[in-house]
Image (cartoon, rainbow, N blue to C red; front, side, top):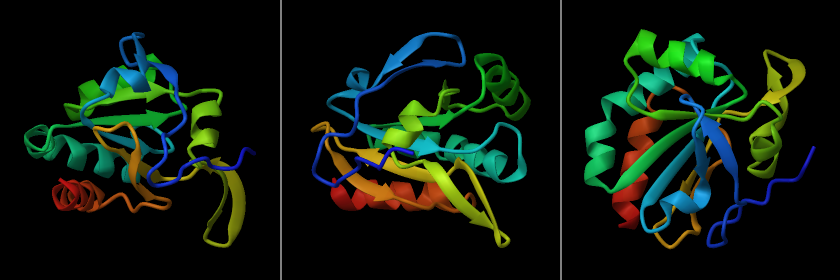
Length: 158
């Protein structure tokens, strides 16, 4: 497992991943605006659905803050499309089936759930500022209420 290279004030690792429409999305596409990268384990599971729906519910506020929200999970474009359609999501979802990007962002590794150690996606969020540098890093995020904490942080930093 790669060590996270996420440091506040430093550039985050570059990536190119495909979204739900199989279009390539690069980190550099978002230079000059706030970018919320939230990493989550699996489409259409309870916690991930709560989180995606809260980011969707707050999308107008994120737009007012000049922020784009991208969700990243190991799921396929087809899974993302079903998830978006079922829950009317307004955020783009990126696919990282190899976990390479997640590893670079510290979002893949050992986690402890109810005393059971497993390896998988660590629910976390990286906020990239308009300068292209990491503005904030939530190493472990809860699904409920997280979208609101991200909005608050962006407001504080603007």
